[in-house]
Length: 179
Figure 1 (spheres, rainbow, N blue to C red):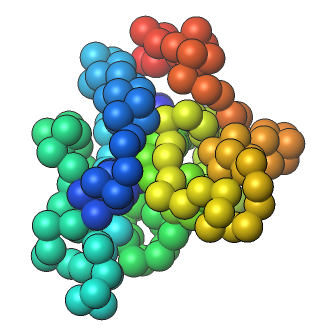
Figure 2 (cartoon, rainbow, N blue to C red):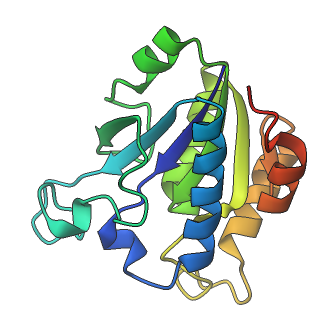
């Protein structure tokens, strides 16, 4: 069985910049999974530090309203990996999930860590590169011209362990073929 992970689509991240394109692609994928009656699992990063934009209980930690009606399951996490200290592994096992699709925020942290953690746990992983986004940019890493989602997608693709697609490739390979 397939499942979709939607990682950290929260006000404290999404309101940081214009992520309309990424949100539209994530919503399209969610709708495909819903139409095929496949699980949509949201991960919600929470921090204990009051100054954090994702402080537990704050408006920033809440799911972004554009997608907040979609989750079948929601897990809170405190690390970049969606597996560490959450009930995600148990849920996936109970549901019989063998393939995970990854979308959400931040590409180079929580999305990448979760994709690698899923692979390490034996899941077939599909990382939808342009259905991820990040608040960081080339200046953050002092790497002129760096396209973070493209860089992460390339690194994961070259691993030959994780399937990396852009949204159009996802539509071509999986839309209406999910079940």
